[in-house]
Amino acid sequence: MKFYNSVGPNPRMVRMFMAERGAVAKLVKVDTRGGENLREPYLKKNPAGLMPTLELDDGTCLSEITAICEYVDETTPGLSLIGATPVERAETRMLVRRVDLNIVEPMLNGFRWSKGLSYFEGRMRCIPEAAEPLKQTARDKLAWVDGLIKGRTFLCGDRFSMADIFLFAFLDFGFKIDQPFDPELSTIPTWYATMAARPSAKA
Image (cartoon, rainbow, N blue to C red; front, top):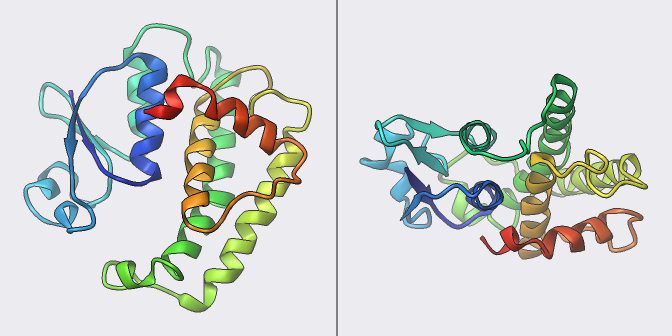
């Protein structure tokens, strides 16, 4: 397999997931700052021009980070990070969806439309006046998730899952874009420290 890799939390999340699963792929660096992902030959791999992409040995290309992770989960041995039962899988996907819609998307667009505006304004429709409200939305929803998981080790209770990797990769990125989480939250700081200590966090 080939993993088309770049800077940013999306590739980081998949690298962490692959490290947890023991999956091995050849890393192919893509220069997103130089726009390599927006032109051929990368667009043949991923017509959306987004990162990352996993190319299988038969030439099949998979994109979208949760889809890549689900493929890796199903094709590697060991305890699933999605879930061993229909209920566990549904719970993981529910939490990933909540994190994505309520925290990750507002956080990233808050960055793209403020600090990252000079880079993104030529690549997507930007709404600078929405940046600060979106950042606050991400903070509010993280506090909501903090309350939901109070008393738990991981987002799915005692079960480590893709949801934890997903949230960690983006909260870690938040420090780089001036959107750190509130250290006074009741659960997230301890959970974050636990995640940061995992070997896969270095992936």
